[in-house]
Image (cartoon, rainbow, N blue to C red; front, side):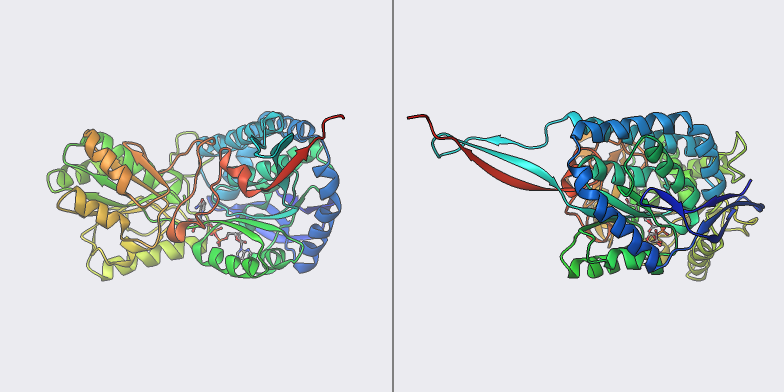
Length: 479
Ligand code: NAD
């Protein structure tokens, strides 16, 4: 079944759909036809959000929270249907998609409860008969720009804290995943979100997205996507001093020390590298092994890779879906071909893809300076290199323009702690895959992975969507 996806502006579904999205696992399955917006639609959405924002900010925080909680219930009831659309639209497996939809519902619950929580502070004052307190104020109209790889969870963890804090939102999802985006909007609209408080503008980043982040009435932009686009948005929106939050690319490394359990280390790396088809900002794409374990580790990793044969995510037993698009496949293949030409070897994969199905690829013998070791591939490809010891491994992990997540596999507590202290990344994982995060733990990176100013998820997220005002409340005693 093909679904048409319109924009959602001022509480109405509008626009003529023209952009066709085909299932990456099955070219005969036309999943959705979505509106391809221009600056005109982006402008109309910002105007609708501006009109609605002060009314929404004036609504009791508990009432705002209630809308999010009700939307979570609706999304939960629709989870199977939404997950199937996500599988068809993005390509991930049914288990991955259902997990993501349920995560989005939990995020709405978590931030819905924020309506009942304290948001300011009461402070002691040096002035007599004076109370000092802080209020968290909404920013106004917030633009949310999101990628295709987590098309409902990432938007939920931006939109929910924005809404509960009293902001109005204009959201530009990735063009590839408009249908999944529409499900989140529908749940919030059906839960009673007033018109104009959340607006959906589908279309290309270079048109609708650019117009949105350049709009003078947009007070803040929260973006997740590639580093190049993020840095461009920083310039455009930063020029007018809009608040900007960027979560961007990664080149996440795992260190495997001699004392690690070899089979568990391989399973941890395989889950991080090949789960989600390697299309996660937190995916493992470099591994540094010490000399005593590298041979055993590679043999074990090759075995684990065999468990990730790609297939159509609609089938129950498939553990890895296709690559999302032809363009993404070309990028991944480009990295692999270049590594081949540079003299690297391959233990698994690196063969011809079947449509968009690409087998997990293990690269060995690449130089530390090779493209495949230094740049984000965003596919099921991992490079394994040898390092003499933990010190050298930490230096290699930190020698990157990125700094999102990093992991270590070891049974030695001192090595784990040393790594946690010295790895220059936003999230460290010990004996766990670099992917997979809790919704209540702050998330973000350093260097070119993030603006590294405001974290996402958990209560840290609320800081981005509010500003702090200090109030002095004096009272004169009678007489
Ligand atoms: P992308 O940068 O191409 O697009 C992201 C979003 O930006 C899309 O909605 C796109 O339409 C929009 N966009 C593009 N050009 C724009 C412009 N000029 N102005 C405004 N908006 C514009 O990224 P993608 O291919 O959708 O996603 C993959 C990337 O996202 C990878 O680099 C990955 O690492 C990153 N990512 C990062 C995180 C994180 O939390 N750090 C999470 C998921 C994905």
